[in-house]
Length: 145
Image 1 (cartoon, rainbow, N blue to C red):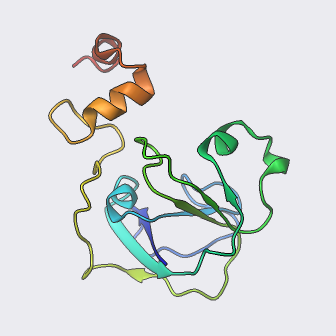
Image 2 (tube, rainbow, N blue to C red; image 1 turned 90 degrees about the vertical axis):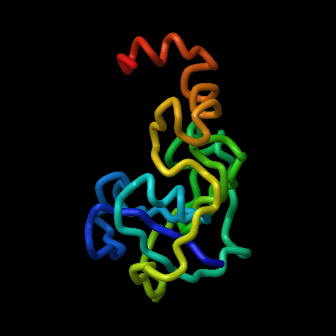
């Protein structure tokens, strides 16, 4: 399977010390290049089969105690929502994969390109629904839009 990682760093590699948003001993990859773009201007690609990896739900990711999560690499199953529209690979250790800058196959898969879209950007309604329980007035107050 093809996975994408977004970073503001020009060179991305797995580090057991973690990264900016990746946390200690984790590196995140999305099945969507657009979701990866939300996390940095540089997008990296890797090929890694995930069919035999443990799979958890988004609810498990947010609510399970950390020690209940898989100790090895695993997949958070996409729920078609804003934050997890597609599967997310959580890489727990380097596995001999090759990560390179993806300059040729970046394409637009229709998902939001930013983590906090503006009112005229794609998937804004889904973002408001998930993050503000559909209350656009609350969003306006919090963002001064």
